[in-house]
Length: 379
Image (tube, rainbow, N blue to C red; front, side, top):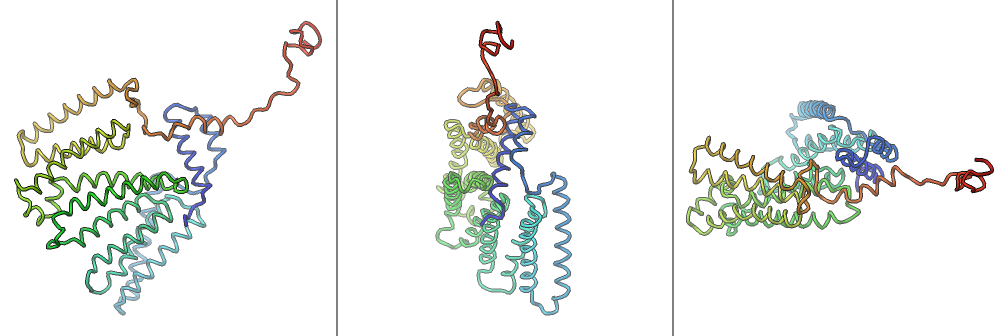
């Protein structure tokens, strides 16, 4: 089902872990060179700016192709055929680039995935029928989910997750009996996605989707908080807030959720030593403070930013000082991650670099050929 070979992806994972270990000073330059030599990566992934250039070039080419197709077929008013042809062209070209040219996050393949989703969903935009927006959203979910599975693209997985939430938003419209509970429905869906990706992430056969699972975990945790934030809910859903005025039970619950979720994230992250929860909890806590300031401002914006900056500097300095010597499982060293991915890295590196060493031939103890500490024989 996956478009890339397991051997290439497995070697890429080893090389990335070795690069991470090299950045942290666990191995030297000779070791990482030996690891890369022992684990060749046969896919084409250019530098960042090359990827951007290739992506822009692909956008221009596909846009001109779509415009040309429109000029040829617009008299027939058959937009379904235009979207179908462009979808097939983009998807077939994507498969060709991956299979023949071995593209992997090269810019062109990423853009072709996005255009495939756009043109596939566009086929259902032709005409005017009931629940058209929901059908288009479902088309985005189906196509994005398939492309994420096929090409292990974390951005496309994020698109599928966002489309699921938006589809729920379209289905539950004002007047629906459960509309007043839509923030909690979003929180429940995001929690289910988080728990589901946690279970799937444990499966060895799905090792190469770990970036997709990581992005989904971040998106799910942020969505759980955003779905209960008072400002976000009031901005995205005016009818909901008009029924949930200040002092009502619904309004109070949203404020409690906005305050509790960052605290729960940070406490859980500290107890379980999960840096992801700590980071998201800290950012959500800042968002909650800004929300409180927006509705119940005590200081001027200038004074609030200055005070907040001083508080963040103090918190950062105290944390760096306190965690400098790895207390409570955390450290102030500049590690890119605090998870357990590098627990077995030294064993892996030893096997990759050290290999098997055979004893030397004609090796004798005592310094001489006859074992007499060099006193006789061939000293």
